[in-house]
Image 1 (tube, protein in one colour):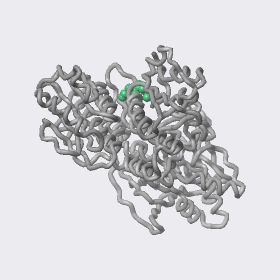
Image 2 (cartoon, protein in one colour):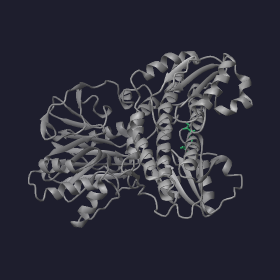
Image 3 (spheres, protein in one colour):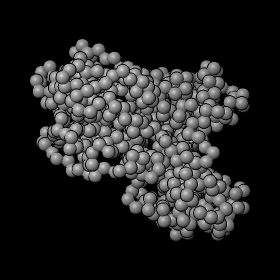
Image 4 (tube, helix red, strand yellow):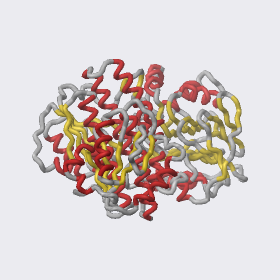
Length: 605
Ligand code: F6R
């Protein structure tokens, strides 16, 4: 989840790019960069800096750009390659510069092909192939825009691209697929590009929100758009007036935006990692699983719930003994650690002190380690032997949503990768698993009317003496996660429980003022869970059932869709639980994004 901005006009270009990038910092900021070309001087000046936009500002403090010209800028959230200056955008060839948001899925094939033709790549990114591919095509195609068109045709994946070239000094070439790109024009003949509204508010009254497959060329006072080789005229939409609102992309809260973003980020998590019905995890050592008989999953909070979920999958699907450890407990228990165990640390931030210390213990005991993390170059990423980035983009809401989703998805891929190595699944079974995992992005799309429905029923839950979220199997960690979300942002007491455990004690609490949120998937242990829920109904508990099967006995009910895999049901129910917590918190007037007593990154013990 990077952010891009572009400008064609007569104003000071550096300032416009820096201000625009500042507005996009919420999309990620492990490094940034810009390239500027002035009309009278066909030199392209470029700058890159690691860290926040203020570092780029410092780097460019002695640079000014006067007169008519073009400029592009980028703020990066690493997905391929470390957040270093070399990997920061713009990437350049011999005479062209490119910035890109998204993932080029077939970059390896393009790179290998270009390397054979003598191209030497500098960075570890997927983006760099775009600029070299363009220059390579331009060797035989004399029209730079046609060369750009041919370049875009060869790219598979998600992209918002801005490319400038000395071969056509006045223009920005652009292309959009599966990630946002907005273009605006104004009465001063200026042209503005951005990943979201915020940077262009105040500079134009309306904007064109490009459709997938759109590309084009822009110069001072003129933009042309194309799709499938034909010129098109995208409609204009009024821009919002409020920047803060625009940063949240129209949502009231970052958490709400992040819930809605899950479908897109899940696509990024999977991108390039599934080919021909198989999982390809090129980032990890091929021999990572050699000699491994056990898995230890270790994390805190929501990430711990992702670990618990994965433990069911490692055992059931990859037939591998798996233990789950709360990092703060693991640290001081003098654990017995055998070298045939792979230690997997899971963390959104990569800075959680307990998880980091647990990882150090595992490493010091000679265990192979893998980090599943959202922040490249974080302490946990730097320490682990192997890393899989979850690619959720920056998560601003303190209550984690999309980070959890991408952790579970990444872990599911690791499970399938291991299952393939250990041959614990038949070819057909593996195919079915892959088919199911590929459905997840669609399942995560919030259906029309769902949030309204949850908003309406949320009013039933503002009083009472507490919540039990219950489920079996992976729906037990999901219940824990639902309860954690609710308590974090509503400050109401909520517990997650394994459905079958209720009768061993907690059922004593049940009365008409105790709320039970029951997760009743159809693909796993439906009858058993249903019996547990009926025991609560029989004691006059207030039950909110979530299931694809009608459940007449409940007080509230949300019907989920008819999925064929329990993990697909898992992700559908996850979104419902997140929205449920959100709606209760809003009704209670709490600070959704910054709940009391909590911090986004817990770097203390
Ligand atoms: C809950 C939440 C926390 C984190 C926990 C671990 O919504 O965000 O429970 O999951 O503090 O943080 P990371 O994943 O950064 O290690």
